[in-house]
Amino acid sequence: MSQPPKRPGPTLPKPPTNHSPTSTLADTALLTGTHTITVASNAIIHPRAKLLSTHGIVNIGEGCIICERSSVGLTSAERMMGGENDVQEGVVLGRGVVVEQGAVVEAGSVGEGCVVEVGARVGRGCVLGKHCKIGPLCVVPANEVLPDYTMVYGNGERRMDRSAVEDLKMRMNEKHVEVLKKLIPSNLAKFQ
Image (cartoon, rainbow, N blue to C red; front, side, top):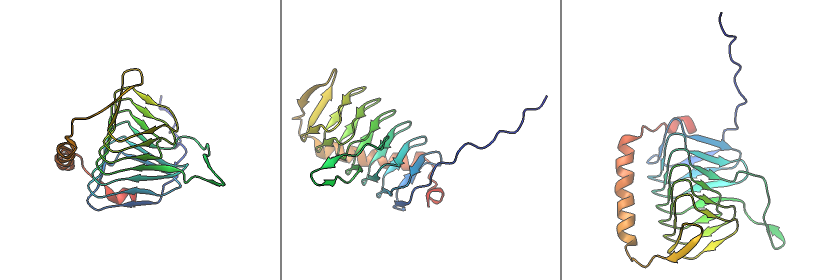
C-alpha cells in the first residue's frame, strides 16, 4: 500500500541577508526571519546552525564560527524598554566569536574573541565584553553584563582570565576558519 504524498510544511520567511563573498554558509544552515541578517567576511556558518531574525537583527562579525545545532538570534517577541524608547533589538557578535554545538545566543552584544561553549545559553539582552568564555552547559541570565575577560563555569561561578594570550587565540581562530573554509561546502547563492 502506498503512502499519501506528504504536504509541504509551512515555509519560514526568508530574511534579507547581507553576506560577504568570503563567508561560508553551509547549504543546510537555517536562516529565517524578517529582519536583516549580516554575515561578515570569513565567517563560518556550519550545517544545521540557526540564525533567527524574526524578532530582531542578527549581525555576525568577521571570522566568527557558528557551529552545528547552535542558535543565534532572539527566540521570542518580548520587548526591552530603554528609557523613553525601545532598545534596538537583535544580536551582534564581534570579530572572532565562536558559538559551539548546541549553544543558544540571544545576547544583545558579544565582544571580540568570546567563546560560547557546547550547550551554553546566553540570555536575551546580555552584554559580553571582549574575550569572555562561557563554559559548557552554563547559563548567563537575561540582561547580565560581563566585563572583558570574564569566564563563566560550573554552576554560574565566575573568574577573570588573566592569561594574556588573546592575540594567540585570535590567530588560532583565523587558522581554524581557514581549515573550515576547505571542509564546509558553501552555498551563498541559496541565501541571496
